[in-house]
Length: 257
Image 1 (cartoon, helix red, strand yellow):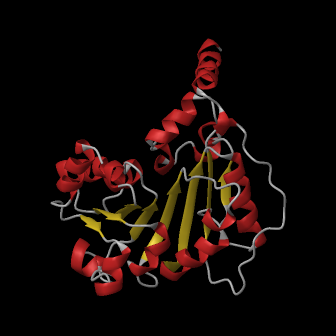
Image 2: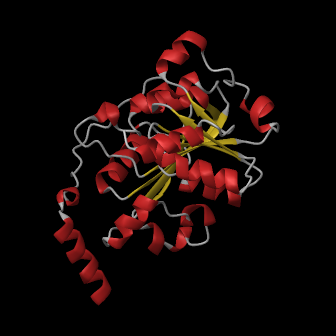
């Protein structure tokens, strides 16, 4: 591990708003704030919004600035990336932000039923060949349901047509409520004034620079007796295999239009 990463990990260990819990610690001690985030950490009764796979924390911090009446928690296993958001939140004295370093599969160890009001999933790996690892698969939806409030929402932003189409089919197939979506977020007038959707992550800016459309979908996550995977063939993405020359070519085409 590089010295820079070690320095970031050491720095984060001093932040009171960063929690790093490997599975071994969870097995031995559990997590003291489960069910108590509002009373013992945020010290308010504001809704909790969770960003899964938060990366550098751009959405977690950006949303916290826009909505001081809500509490935001970014979760990721990549501590060196998370450090950027944790440091920014500390520098700006944001009291409605926390970060949690752990695997997403362990999320139910950290949140009690009805403790989370919204979940954001921003630019996840679409896992085109492994449905059980797909972050909007029914396997993960069952995890989310365990901690979401009855009228809680799940949001997905993605560059991947495969991930977008799969998620839309999953939501429709399981008759989830409040479905709203677009396959071209920044050219869809319905979402033009929604400031929540105008925060751009580091990876999102990369995809936009390659001329790719950003997709968005949100939906409710009620109790479903029997979650079912959609029985439909979904066309896979092919652009992820592009090398640097292809990406530069896409950018050149975009700038010459």
